Image (cartoon, rainbow, N blue to C red; front, side):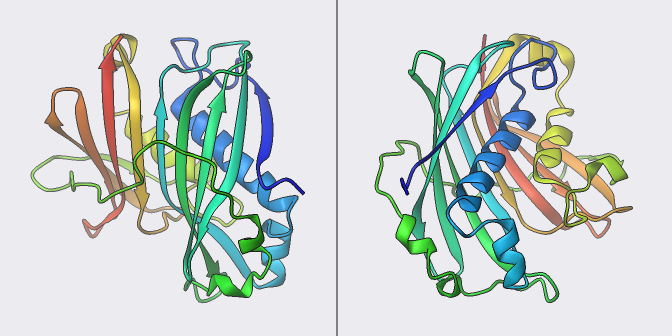
Length: 245
């Protein structure tokens, strides 16, 4: 089977934001879905992981886009495994428009954890995973350390609700992105577009948790954000580089 998976999406009204373009949370969801489908068809998907009493968790995601797809556009996401380590595996993505032109790239880092202990498992147990490593180019910087935003900033409060949860009962990955983007007002979204977004997932959000969401400007049109639990410790951090439309 081909090492690169290819998945096509039609951008309908469920996926676009107020500006009529694919929203970043929905793009993140499509990237995760593409990764899941690629793994499923190659023998290391959700069902197979359950057989190992384990599940995949997303650790890092970075996206760079020249342009966002708009309503009724077609988006093709191609994805492959770039590297497999003992505890983490790196995955790459290329995003193409209907004409086959590249409009962006993404990178992600994943870990597999034991569903009971919540501790990482050795990826060498997944013997087929390394067979799908591919060296296709992905010319964007790998995820790095994201600065803290929680210190010296007042955070907006949010309580994790039913609609925030994924199949594992935790705050789903794209919801972190959604809540962070809500810190920017409508006028900002109307006049700016995201050029690079990087997020680091550090701990699991659970039902009923009260979260504080923080934003800090570090340079013109560049922000870092943090989502913290009641103890003030970050469960997620992100960095956004905007550009004026």
